[in-house]
Image (cartoon, rainbow, N blue to C red; front, side, top):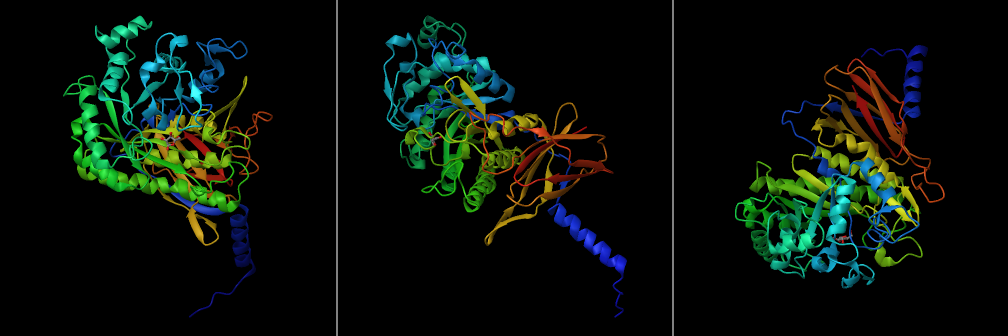
Length: 519
Ligand code: AHR
């Protein structure tokens, strides 16, 4: 065999290639494919969740009509309304969570000084005065410009109570409940479409077996609407806890499909359920574990969808991931039952990668709700008296709202690995959509805490002339916005994307989220 002499120039090429790789991290490729199915990424994937839990409703959304220090509209904070409008919140789930199956909606209507109190048995055992009820929530949704998603009480309520709530909020004509609504000052119905039939029926919603819940669901769904669902309610069954695939199987098998529009799924990203660790002071090991837990969503969605496909190949029934997000220990000195936690770049990683997963599964995942909007778990907003801050998660959701109701552009990604100890995860996640005006948006996340990523994106057609983008990153993955430094983390213009001959060259720094726009 002829040996090639090692020349000086050959050594130079090897050395400069090595240098460029060292200078800009690992290599990745993405190929954009044609969207044969014309799948649309439902805007409802970008939904939020507001439970009567800790300081989410009281002190978060609602400060009361009599408040003289914080600007509000009918007791709802104006700064919060403005921020959520900008976020383009498509739907908002309320009043729980676990609280939903203890809630009696009639306690929250009528004159506020006559409303009975309720003890919040799941969340800190605090007594609340029911001053934020059905009218307050539904009017607030109108103010924000979002669609309400009501979770009804199955665990400790009755079929009649549930059916009457539907009539109270939706009946346009003369009926006992619409008359009551009108006497409470609301003439027109709110026409609520999204209804959750209980919450976590396998746990706080009644500790039921799925076979039992499937029967209960059929009973409740029967009295929510007529036999043909002429009122067009979107009825969502309480779904599986993470990998409980049997739960999804039984619901799909035992509930007649004309009575079922969605099945829920809950999954929280944790370091370890019993050792959640601090929201801000975490090690690389804890960061890696959280990323692994967040990536698990891909497998969960895939496997639950496969079961649904078996019974519903036309994908009529939606997978509704109505609780997701990061869950850590509460901040020092706060009520353990209030689930108040700070929000760092780690949370931005969870948000970016999870939303990419949902976008890519848009055929089946058509509603999702981040837990929870304000002051609870992975919030987009934190409040302290008259101050309000936007978290890194807020910024990711705002950057990603370009995907809402846009057409999915399927992609194939070959990602480098994010390695820690003897484990590895895909470092890069991505999703892409094309909007009604013809612009394509690609969202990219690099979860690697140390390595940068060089990404070559094959655009398949050379139809684009310009690329622009925004990036969210920070000096440390533990960084967060505080009431002292509100804008430490915010999106900035992104300059490291070059378009040439139908290919896009992108350089992503460690733990960053980028959204590109191609025109
Ligand atoms: O989001 C907090 C709680 O987590 C919800 O109330 C419950 O549904 C879930 O277990």
